[in-house]
Length: 431
Image (cartoon, rainbow, N blue to C red; front, side, top):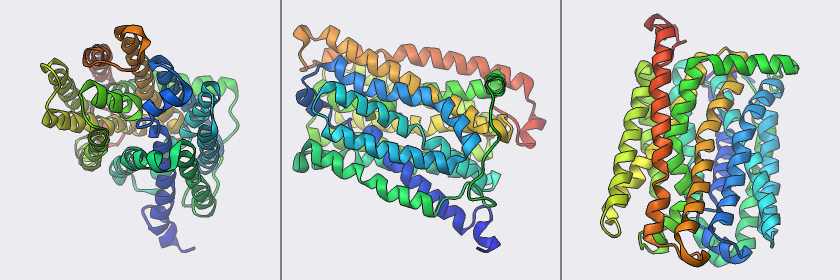
């Protein structure tokens, strides 16, 4: 293998990134596949809104809780081994979900979907940081998040078609089989770094783990990245994973086809905004938090217009909603750039894990809150939710936005007190 092939940003780097991106793509698909199957799930398992929300709650809870352990595993065993394990686990879990006929069995399957999902994105970010030059990492990171979200598109319109034509079991078994092909690619193509196929770290004692995590959390740059991720992502995640389809169909009176297209437009927004944000972050890293605050404020304004609109909102406004919410996903990825510039290499994966759990923790809270409020505002425990019930439920977002924005302002002030512009030029600053 030539030096040109193994150099940072070379042909092998692109191949490694491509296979890892495929694994992330499929993980996003499995994560999002319940979004268009929520109403079918209520019939298949004879459950209500709160129980339906438990599927996604369990998945997100496991995903969030696994982020720090996965980061530590990557630091110890390398991203290739962890991503391969996650891909195989995700494949088995999705097959189990396809065959489940009872609510408890399906719930266990979604738990393992969340566990396997948790082992992909951080691994891919570590591969990107090792295989590409530092100046290109922000752009490649945004492209990773943007292209990976294609999985959510496949989980919208095509998954709706598959469920209709193949049925529940056929649709989910067919998609589960994709993981086997990716496992082969991970074994054959992916290397942990240009120098080593497998790059492992030293064993970590409990004392060393506590010291590493304490140092990561104590740095104001990591806390700023945490709250940026927390505040930007949860609206898009909640709509894409579970409540977007019922909200658009029952809350806004749209057809199932139109609702599927609108959910796909969330990902379209991520496609064009991700590379743009990556470029802006690379050129103006001191203004990363300002970019995120601006985007979150736009999300709040448009959601307010939708919820305050007399009757159902017009289609054009719902399209605008999908765009601003969709931009929130790439905005959350900016938080990972804070981990890159705020930590030494030996604790980068664990710091990234701390940040990555933020948005999913917020999404978990919102998914559960929406389900509980819908059941509270719907008489008789029916799954025929009214537009008024959805207005109440979606208004729970304001609590999370207020908390997140306050913390972003708080920690960017702290970060800017301890990191000056000289540190920015050295590539070790936050903002």
